[in-house]
Image 1 (cartoon, rainbow, N blue to C red):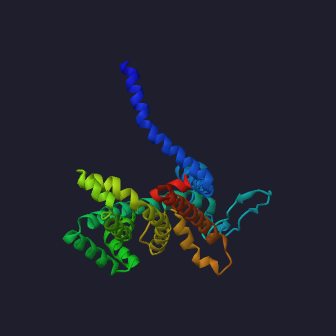
Image 2: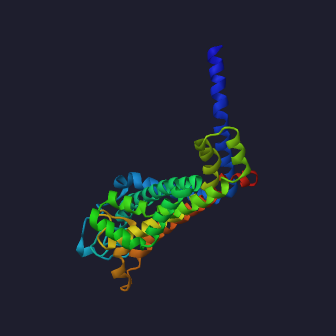
Image 3: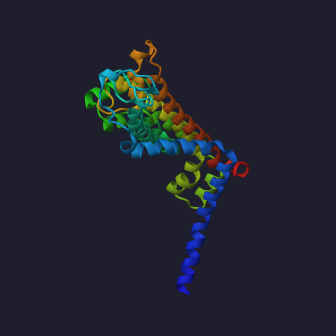
Length: 307
């Protein structure tokens, strides 16, 4: 009897979670486009994890006699040796694209996660507590906004040195202001709502109010912003790598491949910019589609019409 009671209680506890998963799946099937975004991101994630096993060649292997070969060019035996062509140093562009997926996605998602976590936390604290805490946090944000983002990042990286870890931290910290300002404004608006006052009068603690009433209602716009910021972070990594302050030279990334193509575009070597550009575009487009769907799915006001 005791085992049966425990099983029944566990089933009742899991029922809301199963219902949410089913509602999410029905919403995905209804929207359709987010499924395509998930497929594209899944392919990118697969390339990131299994890149070394999939890539046909060493991404840094240089063959100068085969430099700047166009895509799908056949050799004397009629075989395609470089499906996406080669760059100015004779390196296989396909291998560099596959290896670059790992670093580009890592830098993009990790920096956005750091910036989002820091910014949302400080924004909620500022909006919920108000007073001098709000003033201090917002003045620090204003000071950071007074500096150009790339110039500030360059100054910090010159001091810390190039490296993936330093790059992720700097780009992440540089993103927090946007999240903080939006989270603060949303928090100030929501904390004055009747249901928040009712929860407070019933003895709910500040932590419970933040986690149950404020945070779920401010995540929709923040998720959309995060999906856009992944693109800006990848492009920022490209700019910093072009200046020698981002990822080390022996590590390929989409942004670095795109930056390296500048000298060859005027010579008609279009593939050096088109393929990394397409990879970035598809990743960003997929994130934007998923972000738009998540915004509607997580918004309590739209649950009845989107589920």
